[in-house]
Length: 392
Image (cartoon, rainbow, N blue to C red; front, side, top):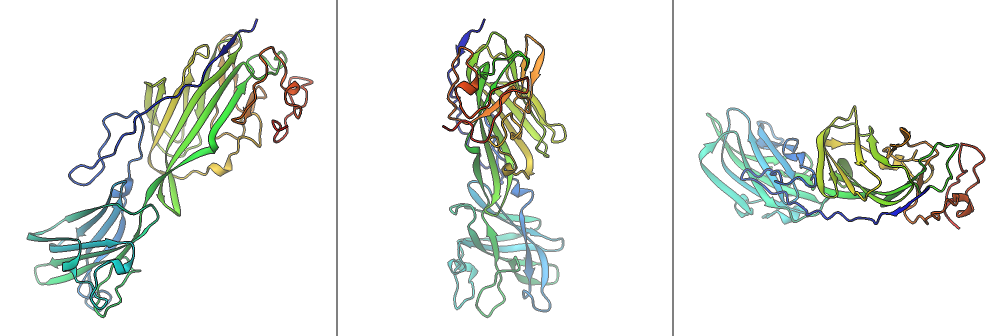
């Protein structure tokens, strides 16, 4: 006896959390980790330019330190880092999105006209940092004038940050730094962000092939961070929305994944409540219970936040050129409580369908009587599907 239980799609509302900055300019952790936000790793792995004193490329020039540059969502950071034996008594910094935006006189930059400047009465060893509001979008090429007066026991010199590809047009030796603004983008997968999976829960030789025993939508959102030309995956979000259950059996829906080769953390929410969290190990992946009981409506969200940038290409996966989950980069498998059976990707009893799926009737009508491009099942190998089988 079949029973009908249509489960309306549930929307999980989550407040966005702002990532602030502490007094040192670094990102602070949000107090409530309802959502994982990528922590910008540029502070620990910045763009590095030389800090050169005494004449640029001329004889006698000395590299006295480095200039570290990075950005988060709100600020651009420019940090002077001195080598041992040197201290810094004066700094000036200016940033613009074109070289002419840095103040110049006859092509030479006068540091006193820069937007940022400090005299350090106690000559500083170690480091000194400026942060400027980030008003430029991701991918913008910035030009940075980073000037300093540095001292050692024997001499005092003028120093400039130098990335090796930026010089002023004047006659003096002043140099500059170029830097491309990094940022975050979101990418839905597949296009439109939604995949629907439908299941049969009986053995393949006994099923009616209506694929309505359990149906759920899976929304996938990836967050990337980097430059316009070099992006790395930093977090993943899976939202599973139950849609229909037309079966007498009870199921447990899992998500198994071992594709990402990066470590991190994960959090799992059921209907907005945190139910599980832990470490994510790239070598092992995860296997979490998305829906513990398909007899009740339960929306699940799984967040994976990677410790560092992670290379991953979604273009290698396509849920609609294959039919039984083979094109997914994760395994949304079904455990059937009544029979102790499991239906994994690649099993003919799992069907990957487009988001505009037209429901088969709940009276056991087989799918080939509704979608005429689907071939009738003649044995337990199931119906015969072809690309775009759902199209008229």
